[in-house]
Image (cartoon, rainbow, N blue to C red; front, side, top):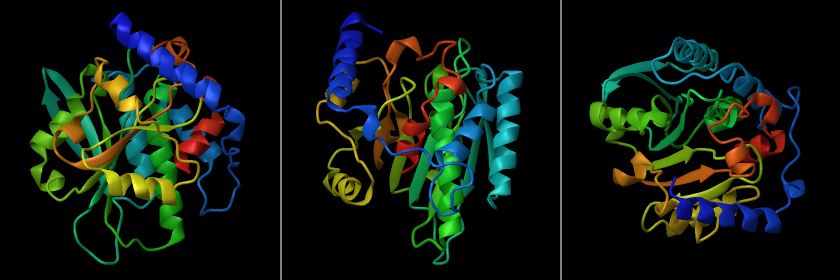
Length: 277
């Protein structure tokens, strides 16, 4: 990361930390909470199983995590599709599933997070947190009844190698990508703090209005996109022309991001509850 980008990210994190104490974040619900709400403890159990140790793309541990996710998705009643691919010489294993809908039709909403980690750390926040939040949300949504809109879940591989899984999906799965209207992507760059919506697709006024009206404790700031544009990171799906939003939390920052300290024990349950809610 360039020094200027690191400084700007630090300013963003400090501003958020000063203005938003974590004490206002929703209290984490326990594993024995009712079936329809999102439970941070149930999500944390997934994150703990995923982030036992580093699992970069094409590693043996990465394959263990992929098998765990296939099993977990199947237990949720989803028909999982493994989407093998190869980008820049790296073998990939994206996972895709659609939630059953009563009205029929193709999924209009794609929920995304990545399950690979860097080799330097187990990736509990980056991004087992996003994968776990989606798994628990799928369980809660399915327990709540039928869906009006089609929803698909995509867990990408090789994100830490340069968005390889996302690129493989948009390039190699046109029949799945074609009907997607909205993409919600979950990421992390710390281990605690509020989850921010930090980037939208162009012309996202209606999506932002929906976020502010429908979500509990919505957090967004207009300057975050400008900071993100000056960093070496990127996201594939909005570049590919879909409407959508990117979410992440940054509390803890570089002490935990891409380090051996990114463990389940250091992952905030309050942040997980905020992600799910």
